[in-house]
Image 1 (cartoon, rainbow, N blue to C red):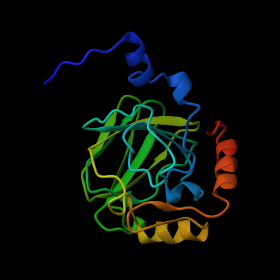
Image 2 (tube, rainbow, N blue to C red; image 1 turned 90 degrees about the horizontal axis):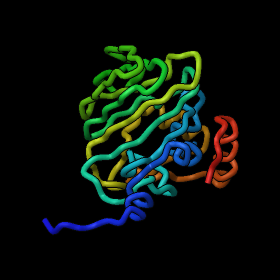
Image 3 (cartoon, one colour; image 1 turned 180 degrees about the horizontal axis):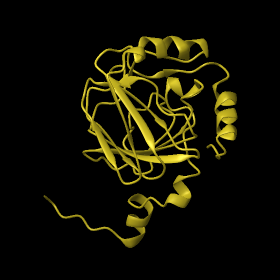
Image 4 (cartoon, rainbow, N blue to C red; image 1 turned 135 degrees about the vertical axis):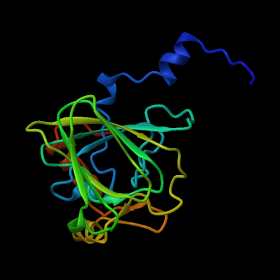
Length: 203
């Protein structure tokens, strides 16, 4: 491998992510479920697309990596709706407590197991297993996510429970066969409203 040299300025500009800057660049409507009450949260793309259905945003570090990193901040009782991926998805709790629940069927009424994990705990979820999770704390909480590399917008991802797809559609949110969000005409307005509700600046 050819050795490449980097200046201090290049490292700072392209390879360092500072939380004080990142926290102002949240994605309030990253997925079609993000509009549904009980699933509203802020997503942060650090490395890779982190399964986003919204193609508007770039990760904090754009250099290609063989993994993908993101973060989630959610109010109490909120978190991603029932879904699955065709790759491993792992979560490390930064603050608060989180309830994870899962099952082999795509029906969120047929959950087969659940657990609550706290700060510094990690859960790794296998491909094909449906899962949902929510902030089980009484204040906003943070998760750190690690995903296996995967192709972007080459198929539906996440793969949602049909109930979630129907519920999102009631709010005007859909995704196409490539997994890209079909945004309602008032998307920008809804995004600003969600950002304000969750108290964050939006690009």
